[in-house]
View (tube, rainbow, N blue to C red):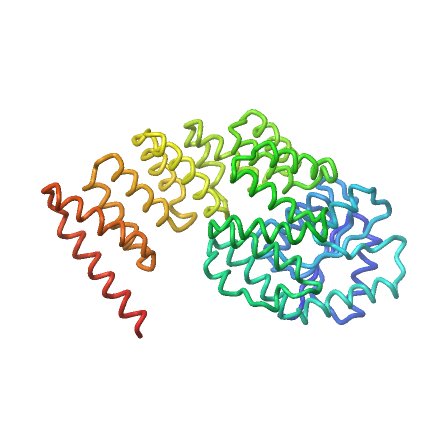
Amino acid sequence: MAIQRILVLDDNTTNTLFFEVLLKDLGFEEVFISPTGADAIKIAEKNHIQFVICSWELSGMPGTVFIQKLRARKKRKYIPCVIYSKRMNEQDVQLTKELGFKNILPMPFEKAKAKELLSEIIEHENNIDPKEVAIRKIEMYMSDGQPGEAFKMFNDSLFQPGPFRNHALVAAAEVFIGLSKYDKAKKCVSDVLERHPDDYKALQLKAKLASRDGSHEEAIEILKGLMDRSPRNLSTRVNLGAAYVTADRFDEAKQVFEGVLEEDPDNQNAKDHMATVAFSQGNFSLAEQLIAETENGNELARIFNNMAISQVNEGHHDTGIQTYENAIRLLADKTRLYLLHYNLGLAYRKKGDLEKGLKVLGECYLSAPDFEKAYVAIARVYKEMKKKGLTPDPGIIREIKDKRAEHAQKLSA
């Protein structure tokens, strides 16, 4: 979709007038002006802004926070931005690199150079390279919790040497993490860091993989190093807090999240991770309040799922079952719940409650008939019940058979 709606954010009317005139010269009629970051976010939401020109030095919400807040919503993840500044320190420059901005416009403005830069960016966005389009689709599938669909987007050309290889490898690492293929994810991350040891996204993923492996100190040290380099990067700070949560260092996690929320009170990622702390401590009402506006239901489901799996594996079946049930209630309208239902059914089976296990596994399969592991688990529980002389609920069995036949018919059509 060609860029049409542009937002200029600055509390200096001389600067906004400069860009308003320049954009009109370039043929743009839908130009919106905002003096504050809070107002700009509302304008971006209401008017479906496609391109942003932003002063780095702003009163109230600084440009450092505004840009990150703007792109926090999935639908604005790739919105192009031009930043201009009279004075950017080393940390500012580092942050813009980590956020993927190469378009820094120095001041005072030179009209010809400003027009050339804006034209180049708009031309690029209106004619995005097919490889970049494919990578963005992969990342959007991951945002929607669909690593299988993201994997289908892979092709050899994405990973050939060129300007998109590192981006493609980082996206692939995310997909492999989503598919629990951690060795392949590590290989992708290593390939990037071998050529670019300071690659921000690859280092973030290296920390995530270390946390998954239980190497908590390694993950925390990587993220602390990134914070030292770029302390205003809110994503790094949230990820550090998440690493503390994984390491059961809740007080340090809270301190990090509170610091993020002090700068950006609406930061949903920080709220989501604060919710995991509240959840683990039994404060479900606070957890529910914090995730009311979340778009990260898939990640929260993964965290709660791992928490419950650990409890069940330690023999605390009732605690694990309660964790699953609370998670399902909290995330009812935030994500697909079939994995939580699946593992809840297995938890009931481990506890010895085969009847309840069959019922929950049936709910899982009926909601996701393409999830074959649920059907296999149902068959096993069914056999176990028969062996013990128990009678499976004929209504559930009939529903499952009907759903399986319906799904098979769809696949063959």
